[in-house]
Image (cartoon, rainbow, N blue to C red; front, top):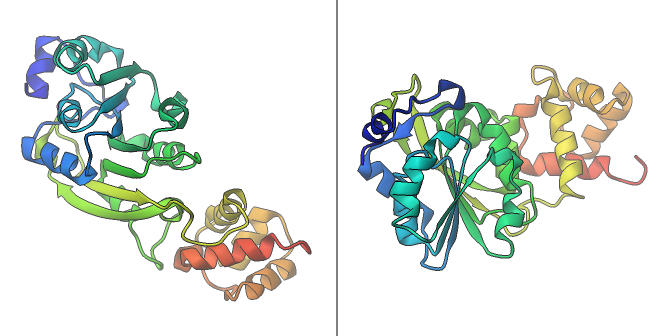
Length: 275
């Protein structure tokens, strides 16, 4: 049933504070499921099932679907429309940021499919990608501007782009018109697919060292790297310049211009015993 009709039937008003915009276009829902490339043995974690329009499609293609929904008002809808006809679906009513997803599915390989609330996209991505037992693939509906930031190239990189691209290869699958959501959002959306790497694409001492350097570099994005890194790592200017030159990076460059490989070289230089 159409999300609006279901919500009207159960007298539920979408909460703007939760970023609730329900996708209702069947063709787009089918395309999202196809993009996930699920097999009959797969475990899927769905974030934000809403009224279950995507959940039922996932349940038809996967062995198990774990849906995480923050809004308990939707429980009567999901119980009737999803849990009853699909015994392979389990719904957890909790904020996904408080759920240890990796522990929940371990040791199974899994795929994440989500219509991500725009205001917590970065937090959700970090929460899903940072654990050692991360999903092998993520298919996410996000704000189009955020999608473009995720897949950005050097010259236009952000902390978000580097964070995602460290863990996997990201690409935009499709761009979505606001008219296919209800309520209609003020911004356009896009579907992003992220295929995670079994091992990092770049050689780093450890992920913590890498991201400590990236955070320092992007902490004052408009500054030249020598100033941003000095401030972020609390080291003097001469030491920062030497560090950047050791990594083969011009100290006058800005954070958004560095490649993933250059960030890795910088984190390796910083991790040397002499530091």
